[in-house]
Image (cartoon, rainbow, N blue to C red; front, side, top):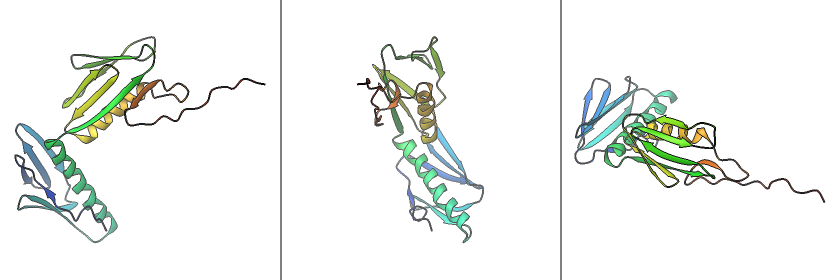
Length: 178
């Protein structure tokens, strides 16, 4: 049984939540986020909270119950505070720069990598740190993962693109024969 599904999601000030059939619509200012539940959970908006209830008693229903509650909670957090991921670039000659809505990366290849930033995502570059922010948790994480995949950190010198809170376990290089 889901413990997460039991908790109601508190609606913060300035956020308007409505139900349109099986879809939950959260709106703050001109930003609107939608979550389609496909009728897998029952949703009620009451007393400034959104309450999720199971449809059946099977394990699948309990799984959807916790999942949709978490997805909607992430929408509320995204509208209030937003989500942020930071990447760090290590390596001689490795650089990043913003050119409009395109992130230009020089990562030791024979060519530059130009990455188009999706809508709703903000990217800033300061020295060797790339900061990705936005209101959609999944998109922020996906963009960060795609940028990291261009040159993941290698274990010998630590060169590459890594998350700022990631720890690279370093290997000892070849040791000379005695």
